[in-house]
Amino acid sequence: MSLGSRLPWRRWNAALHRDIGFLAVGLTLVYAISGLAVNHMAHWNPNYRRVVKIHEIGALNKELPEAQLAAETLARLGVEAKPRAAFQPDQDTLEIYMKEGKYAVDLPTGKVLYEANLPRPVLMAMNRLHLNAPKKAWTWIADLYALSLIALALTGLFILKGPKGIKGRGAWLTALGCAIPTGYWVWWAYLR
Image (cartoon, rainbow, N blue to C red; front, top):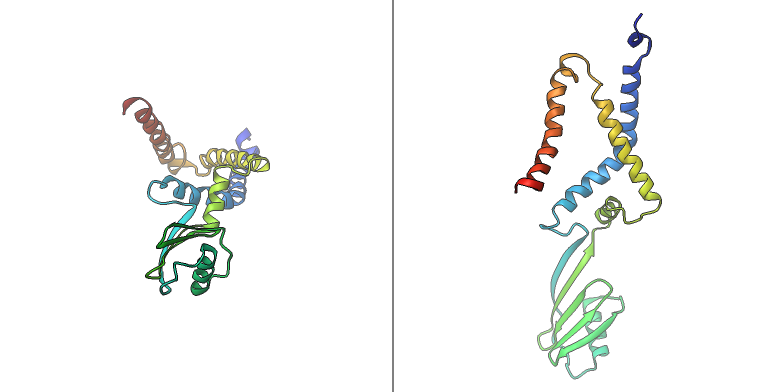
């Protein structure tokens, strides 16, 4: 009886691969979704969404003090939150700064432009985890996840036997999978 038939290493390898894979699903989704979002920051803001709205509330008496104009504007808009500040850059304009966003009011016409950058709560949380904003214990969790990905990659090489495994088609696919990042790195670092 050979050593390979006495030690069921393939069964242990498959079980390890399966169980690590189940454990890694949540973190894999967080890192994958966040990675897609962060990779395209040139096209959109993955943490905040831009909101622009125009309202018409009717003309306001520009002779009133800023605080009164701000209160009247917010009342007409149905906004109950208190403003952080109000400012009149000129006689016909009032700017009201809120916790999230700003109202720009054209006093003679009553047109109000609302602009805000509102958080994307779930995606922002994923991005912060991906970029290790929490530090401390999260660093260890992320390191364990990275080690689990290494284990998944290595155990995955030996799941299948024969021509579909690492001695056949798997060898070519593994070589291609390693050549893509290596080739891109060589191009980026030395040839571009």
